Image (cartoon, rainbow, N blue to C red; front, side, top):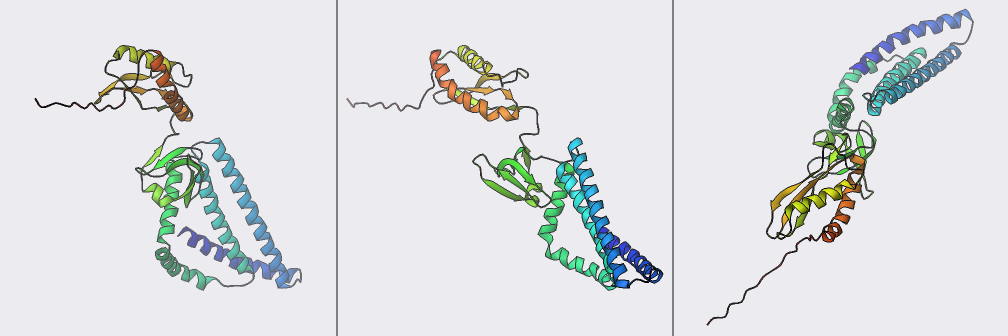
Length: 290
């Protein structure tokens, strides 16, 4: 609707430009085609300058204001560019005396037809607008889309799709419609993240000693935040082991470093302190009939 209004307004301006062309050609005794070409060139140059000014201004503003994200800036830039170029093209055609009234009259019907034909594309476009407005993630964030869905780092995003890079360096291009219609779990948009790890020890091992050993091990990692304090508690009792929950808090960027290091260190640390992890055993009793 906005584009139709812009086109209609440009058509009115084109009629005025046609009168200007006639006046200039008569005043300076110049060929009408030459005057039209000069005015058309000026219109195109002005349109380019306006687009460049808008693009630079909005891009700079998006860098200064974190709430005005790059995808929002791109959305506004593209909308402005489309409107400006529609006005410019209609004005240029009007300068050369081309009447666009029948074309504008048919745009309404054409718009309805295209709307049905491009439902999926339009849905993705509007989903991209909703993502831009609500800003659930940014470029560089690690996100997961949908329950048990694709997860990775956002490396690019526009109004139609987002591009993710997974931990094993696979590239996924995901339609914005799918993104917006599913749960978006953002692991990077927060200041801290909790690791949920478990450690199993034998029933013969001392519970309090095991807690102390695990707390001391976590305390040696500088990435672990002191506040809130790491949690080390008995989580459950398994068939052959006491299961401890170890839950420290770290910055999102340190999550996997601490996770892998802890799993590498914990077995040796436990054994150095006389504690060991159990393994499944099968006890078979054979009874002899008397």
